[in-house]
Structure formats: structure tokens, C-alpha cells
Image (cartoon, rainbow, N blue to C red; front, side, top):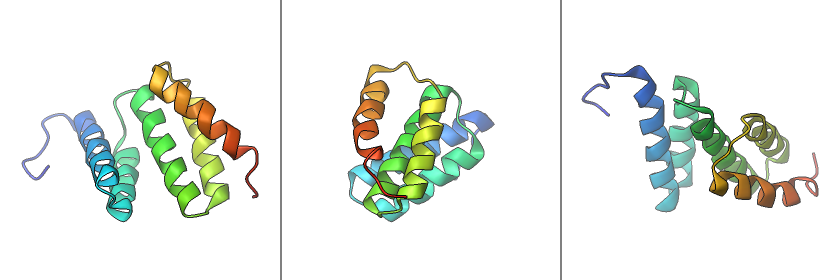
Length: 102
């Protein structure tokens, strides 16, 4: 990342990947930080955007910040993703979202 990205749109995607890796390693705080930066910098397409919002939604659910979780879920759904994994995740999270307070 410190080398400087030749394409600005690749920067957001790289941040998203770093966030996902941090999440897999169990570093939730660092993962959330990277994913927020990725969303701020902008992502190359709606699929990546939906993945970022979904990841933020699950982070907020774990933190019990239900209103924020619902907001990220709506944003992810609004991207109209077509990738099967993302569509499946949206369906799964949708089952829980309806039962959440907030």
C-alpha cells in the first residue's frame, strides 16, 4: 500500500482485501478500519461495494449496533449484487435483520 497505487480505483479494492484478511485473522477492529477506508475511497464496482457493506453489516451485528447493521444491509441490497455468494449472504442476513431491534 505504501508504494502508491497507480490507479486510484484500485486503492479502495486493496483496502477491502486488507480488511477481509484482518477479519479472517480475527482482528475485527483493524478489519473494520480498512473496510471503512475502502468505502470512503470508492470501490471499482457494485459487487465489491455490496461485499464491503455486508461485511460492515456483520461487524455491526457483532457489536450489537443494530441500527447501523440495518443501514449497511440496506446499502448492500441497493447495490443489486449478482455474485452467488453475496446473494446468499444477503438472504442469510436478511433472516436475522427482520428480528433485530432498532
